Amino acid sequence: MKRTSAMALGLFLFGLAGVEHPPVALAQSAGGWTTLLDGTNWNQFTPIGGANWRVVDGAVQADSGKGGFLVSKASYGDFELRAEVWVTPDANSGIFIRAENPKEITAMNAYEVNIYDMRPDQAYRTGGIVDVAKPMSVMNAGNRWNTMEIAAKGPRLTVRLNGMPMVDVQDTKHARGPFALQAGVGTVKFRKVEIR
Image (cartoon, rainbow, N blue to C red):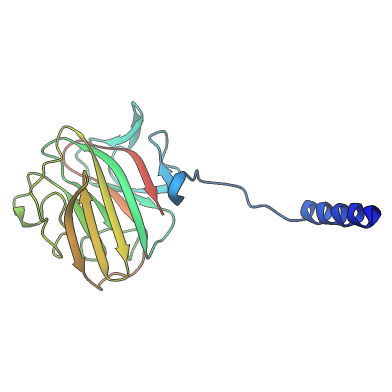
């Protein structure tokens, strides 16, 4: 009986040696969150546009005043996303989700979760989804670190800013696609972006 058990264990271990284990490309943290941006690089993103993205003091930032995006290399349908973001009060930034064309990001082919305290039309200011849902509260993001939480589950989209509910809406225009971090006017910094 011992001989049979030893032989079975040997065959099992031999079989495991032949199994290919995929390399771990992204760090997973507690709760199933995968870190896509940790403030040291933007390897999981493709830059488009003229923004001067670079790593500064543990964050990825842009401040050239030229529009641009960091577009995720992966595409997502249903997900939860959280990002730590810092902007100057005049900044025009945002997180675009379910983008249909990763080479050209617009509020027409994606949902734009706005980070824009001084937006001329305050209806879709910081925390709102442009042309879809106005924010429930007025919160300014300028000159401090903020946590933006975005969830997309089928047609339901929710946004929280620093723990405060900002949007809870149903919309079916965009079902799947990459997400994009926006740089425009002012300074924008991202230091932690996670998804699950």
